[in-house]
Image (cartoon, rainbow, N blue to C red; front, side, top):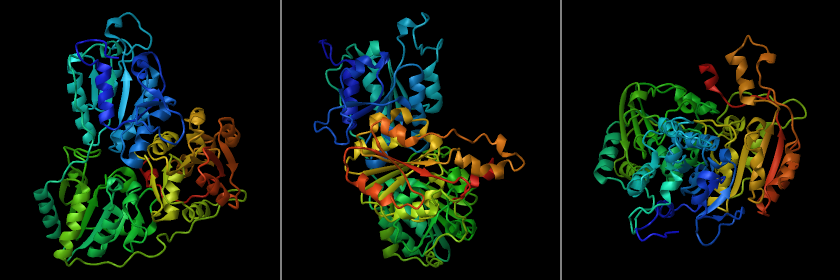
Length: 578
């Protein structure tokens, strides 16, 4: 591609950067502004097995789903991914995933082109200038420091080095390319970019951290909140067990924070707030000025603390993410009612050091009793005849998960009810939910990203019949990836329908606007090359379906689950905020 004696072209520099960052797959759809970039990529075969050469490849996938693929790969393995879209509406579709990457502090690369500057004022198709959709200010409004416009050959390397720094800090980036400019030589004979690696801890900072926390523990009850950053920490499950048992401290966790918890931890009281367990909520509501709260990699978002402040007399926050989502001026101090300290340092080293320090300098906190075996005390009604009892469904699945299972909950009843029923994380699985943005239909892109990043995994997704409508047209591209997708079929926007009696108690069902036209999900899936099954209400074919999925036969499976919206399981505190 480099036909000039004046160094690398802009495209060659971009490709070098993507390679150095460990990116091997781009997802999206080709189009006018991408043609000269994509000519350098081989097509992805569309199967779960990774091509052996490590070359950058394009996995063709509709832009809405494609925008979530890099997020799925990162959650699965920590590997970076890249998604692409051409000018116009495609960029807006892709950027739905950008929002969740921002809100969950997930590094990912979004690459989009703009119209040629020479065409401005001449009404080009899919005009991205200020006279058209004015896309650059739109992107900058969402991630002000994360948009890098590569429209000057002499500054491309500098721009990409700045982008690399953003990725290092767990931030998504947008590379905006001007196709005509990137074809030109940059004047650089070579360029050097680095792999994205975790930051190293400052030993003196970690020492100050453990000593400060230790000094406030004697004579106080300690509560530990496990957050989603722990999913990125090796051995986090064992470390949180050791810490909670050292302190006799009840451990509660956020939706994704469960990935940092051991099922067998006797101090584990469960999920809090959205889909929360009764035992965990009792602990959380009891926190007062005499207590110490230790927050490990958790953001106090609405689904975790329901817009409330931390109530403990002393709140200590340890996070790996500088200026992460939810922080003001680099801190969560505004979310604490009383004394507050925060450290930004790699969680792994901080946890190791804290556990080891407490072992050599045992504190004398007020120890509490272990959690009860059953974390729920409230009664829940069964469904009407002909529907699957979702308590039995999630419980049965929980007893059948194969090792190395990765799961994703779409914005459906599953992302509220699964954790309520199962109560504790399963040692064979890791489950994730992108609930902060709550973009319906994210599950297909997430599942594809996870499977491409770790082909040996069993990837499972739960989606709703409303969510399904946003990605159904992309099923064919995922037909050979061995995905397992459960569609919760209740012919309604179930989460909204369940919440409306609280939000609008005087409004009749006809004005709920939650009903959906029924469709045959199995027939649609089979037409797209998937295997498909209807789950029997008594679950008698569930184990057989899971067995077929475990065979990794090269064919994805869709399972329709008949769900009764009137069966209300998990808590939804947000309804009271509406």
